[in-house]
Length: 161
Image (cartoon, rainbow, N blue to C red; front, top):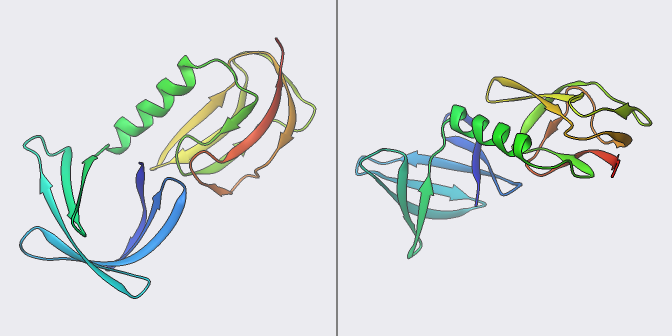
């Protein structure tokens, strides 16, 4: 499960959990727990931090979840490593919620391995999606300025075999 904080205004937080957006009112309590109100239902959650500070145990509704916290740099590096080590697929998808800053290709364009297709921004860092193999753009599904969710298809490609 991947959870991303999208925004926080006062006690109201908007989060993305595996591509689904949730909005809740969250109030932190003094004892390390918090009160959560979501769609009129009230929940109490307890957060227990590990010694390293990067791992939490979350207790809510008689269930316990192990949470690993990734800071923006770690998440960015994971996204870059994933795109650099995988072979070119027939789609370009968002590795995390982000904003499309620039679209460098259009339907019918022929791209060579290493060509840049998109520039995206997530957590105030910009990254470029470069194709890993020669391909042709079949469809561009986003425009500059679009906010996209994790695993959303951005571009469809015909990959040369």
